[in-house]
Length: 201
Image 1 (cartoon, one colour):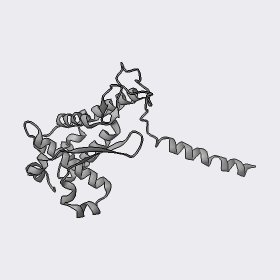
Image 2: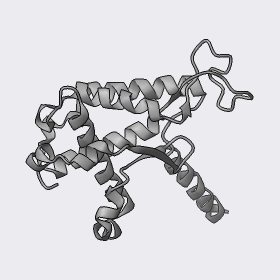
Image 3: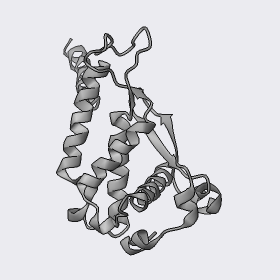
Image 4: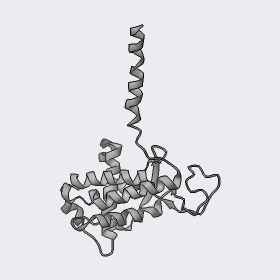
């Protein structure tokens, strides 16, 4: 797909009939990147998949999956009419395929990162998975001819939704989502302090 017109006009009977498999590949403790694969897509074009990176392959699968979601939407939606509200519907739709336990405030394990026993709390998509997914779809939208100012994946409502998911899951799971990059410069400065003291003596 090289343009928004091809994306909107493309529709195949095999894609709409295929059941999408949602599988998680764990890259870190909380950032489970969600893979959206179609049973027929892997065998149809094996050569391009070998030349593209893992990120590009994942981005293409996510883009195709979102297109299938729009075609299956009732009523069907074109990409040109897609808004941030439709992106939020898509993210909530993905929750049914989530594998991350998010405890409710009533649950005795609320705020515990490692609960000692099972509980009936629902499984959701992890914030890291959704955040990475939106990043890939946002890039794919512009790579396929979309204008940055019209990008529904960069809408303010989507950013606020991801922030709410991050904060709520952080409290429910007892996990901090603070960036680790801020600690690295401090560690490097501390390592550079001892040499001057040795030279002074």
